[in-house]
Length: 208
Image (cartoon, rainbow, N blue to C red; front, side, top):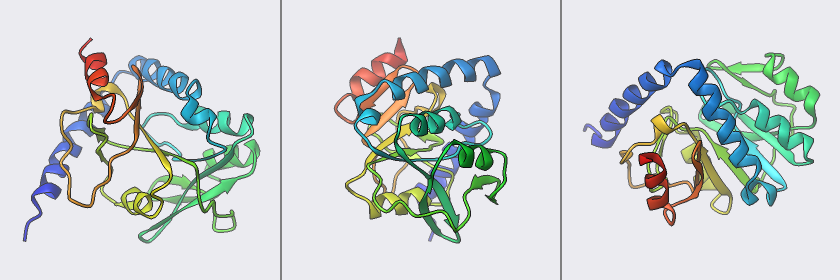
């Protein structure tokens, strides 16, 4: 039996990834700088002693300055490690380990830099910075199709969640299944928005 939502997700994913790949380099740098500024100025990040954040690749929002910021400001930082269908948050102790991760000195999982199995697990992060291909004003996100974050978020219901994306990745409605969970916040170049409470403000910022 064909899953209609899965088919719609693939269509949207392909369309938005195409737009991401066509973004000019100057536009990417401009939006990423604004996103980083909104995140680092937010009480959401400030009040979270432990942060679980993805290590960006290719055309994603550039998280490497954010990862360094967290370590420089005394936060416990973890990045994903994936094995088969499971994802764990693995703690990076310092900037040296972050630099080694970025340079590919540990492991690579489907093109994504990740720590080795010897890095300790962060069991209950207070905040998770979530990647997405697309997100809508209700907080529903579309990932890359592996389901790693969907499974992880369901296992950590008390964790604060922030999706990060550029404005071209915000769409009216993300196709969803009944088990999909929305994120609590969306950070774009226009601000950090609590969803769904601030959905109208988010939509207004995009239109303007």
